[in-house]
Image 1 (cartoon, rainbow, N blue to C red):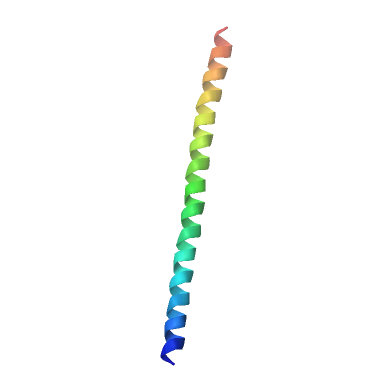
Image 2 (cartoon, rainbow, N blue to C red; image 1 turned 120 degrees about the vertical axis):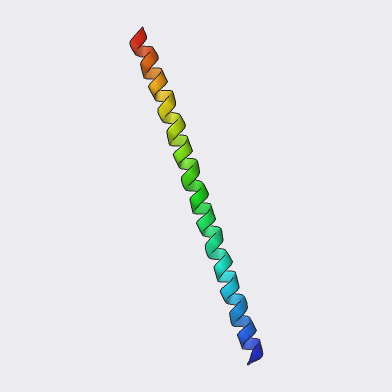
Length: 54
């Protein structure tokens, strides 16, 4: 009975860390995507502004 309890505890702990790992990966991808969109927006604005000046 004790070994079953330990096995369940280890499974729950592994599940907990797996969920945190996936959530961290998703959060990092979201932040990276937002940064890429921000930089692309700034570059496009500068390009359009230079094009209007000519």
